[in-house]
Length: 319
Image (cartoon, rainbow, N blue to C red):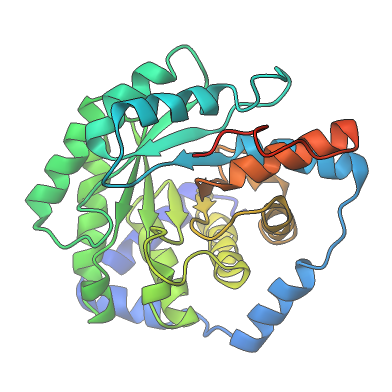
């Protein structure tokens, strides 16, 4: 941690002064050793977590879930049911923690807000023409403002991947800054769609670009493409938030999303967090899972630890 965090943060603002300075900074970041990154992610994934530690990890993972429904067929009834599940994941066991948030489209925010009223569960909303992000900035900002006005506590935005891949970093940066301003008091998660960025170097650059733009979280994916969160790309983003805090004193969260379906997977990601960024990130204020089906498996494994047996298929609701 720098002795003068504000000075360090101010120094980094100089890199966004122009397209050329931003490009020079992002392309000056250390290149990613793909073999080393994937090897470390695989090695950390072999850590064995037993008994009490496993029970703690499962409850921690439950508390980090952004319980998500982002389908064209979403109905108010489905969103209300999701909200009830987020508040009390296991109706038979009041010791099960609530999830961190429910994540819905902007038009469902008011319904979700009503469903979780009186609880600690936040309402997150995707915006900025999710998932493709192909819309004029004015439309994206209107999307954000409507979600916030309806009660969203958090906004999950998508970057313009076309602009990023074309090297138009300043355009992407300016959009993030504008969306952050439109969020007001809501926290901003910036989604990179890592499966479309092609290289680990691009993921590292996108991570720093998002953090420079004011992201409260950086997020791997929309969950709408073939390749979503992986241990390797999440490890890389955890390294980025660790290094960003070391330089600026500003802590940024990480949210892997898409493809994380089992308790075993979730615990592997928690090990990555602990071993890479550290204990300060082992909290749902700084780490989330974007998931729809993960919670069911966490609840099944939690019940197995408590009773020594798995329940039948009706033990958890089908999302």
